[in-house]
Image (cartoon, rainbow, N blue to C red; front, top):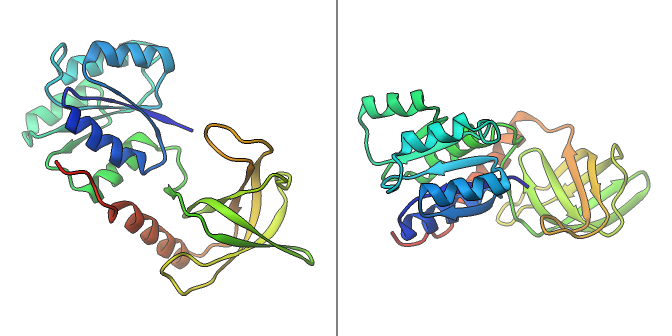
Length: 234
């Protein structure tokens, strides 16, 4: 599982950002100043960093440059959350090495899009935690498993007896609130035989015959699931 470091001096802002970013399935760490953030980063090497405003010991651009000049941290994309819409400030941010700038007040929908674009370019799709029964068809065999999460292109199923990678199978399920039965062909892409901190024992199944129409329906469902949940008060 990837993890994101949030650096912001405001406790309310850190908690707000943590709630939003956590829904995208990242593991999170938060720091209140640049020195603390750099310490955490050098200990654990984040996959991405979000820097807010008002960091007392560094300006956001100074802090970004420090990350980019450190060989062990330079590959992590960095997103700046700013209340300034000034074009010069945005230009300076990009020159310092920021992958993107998100303007406050935050639009949750746009923020999700920016996070996916700037912070997680290697992710294939957004995944949300959905626990539903999923019917598996393998030859003449049929059995049901419970999902752990579902995305636009696949599903993770909980089981103590996962099938080996590259196993082909059929997948059927209904999402809460939708009448449509989703019926896909799939392929096991990884198996985990024991529980870990990140995932329970189970297997990841990639959909192999998904149409663009169905992918769009799944994408809209995932986006609605993420953006419609209650956010903390500002």
